[in-house]
Image (tube, rainbow, N blue to C red; front, side, top):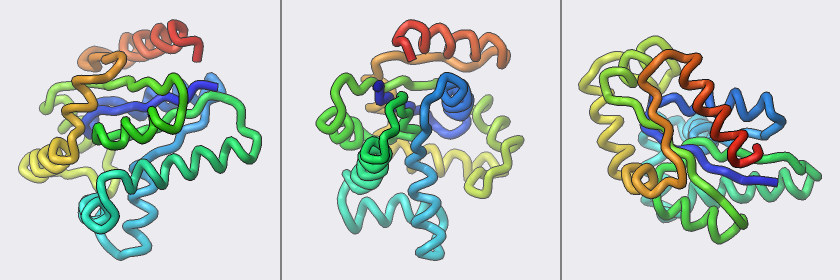
Amino acid sequence: MRIMGISGLPGAGKDLVSELAKKRGAKIVSMGDIIREEAKKRGESTGETASNLRAEFGQYIVSELTIKKIKQLQEEGFENSIIVEGIRSHHEVEMFKENFDNFIILSIFANPSIRFERLKLRGREDDCQDYEGFKIRDERELGFGIGNVISLSDKMIINESDLDSYADKINEFFDEIEL
């Protein structure tokens, strides 16, 4: 079983990595989904909840909740690969490496103008429709330390071309690591 993390700023293309991994039998555990679930409970926006959780419980809280979920899957007998989507800080990477042997990080990069256009089309509730809000969200993500995660990742894929070329790059990487 391989446990791998995916990182990248919003709109970079992490979702396609997850979709292709699912086709190969992997389970996706989204750190963003964990925050969105908590935000609903709290009646806050996802951005507020992401910041508040870390302020209340420390930098490791989201990774701790994610690790708990992964260990539960393992206890339930899930034996295929697990993809952790949305790693945002080196603190989180440290926790995953401490808990799972051979944990690796794949980072996805796309320039801001491309990512902004993708987010406008995606239309998820936490996606900004104005560029100023988009920049604020990027700054918050960078404040969590996502830049460090991306710069120290085991592999980086640049996603600035067509969808088929990007999918080919992802599948080549999965073949390389035998996912």
